[in-house]
Length: 123
Picture 1 (spheres, rainbow, N blue to C red):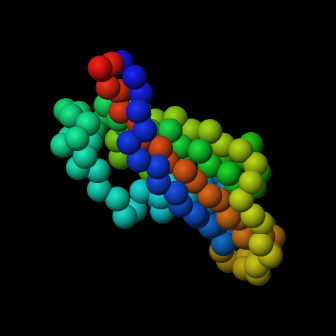
Picture 2 (picture 1 turned 135 degrees about the vertical axis):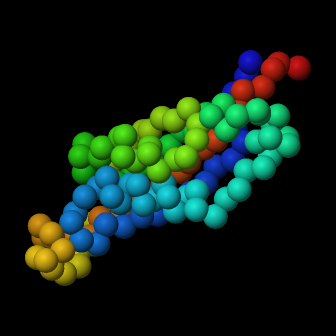
């Protein structure tokens, strides 16, 4: 069996209040998959179950060591999921609003790439 890329989806997510890199990362993944349908998983790749997809997520976000992996991967409805988190994204100065649990004026921006692979038999 050989893994073949089926689709790569990109997205961006922001946590404007709360300064939580997990929130920004999860929003980036949600944005990446929000406007996609994958009927080719069945019709072209021939999978019987959407959980046969291999879904690799790569996220770049400020403070990557604070990202809670399970919460980011929970955004994905199906697949054999994995997450790689690296330093990146942006920090933009916003406005701290205490009632929104802001710790400071920072807004965290994350970017994500979601790659779906399928296993196919060697020809």
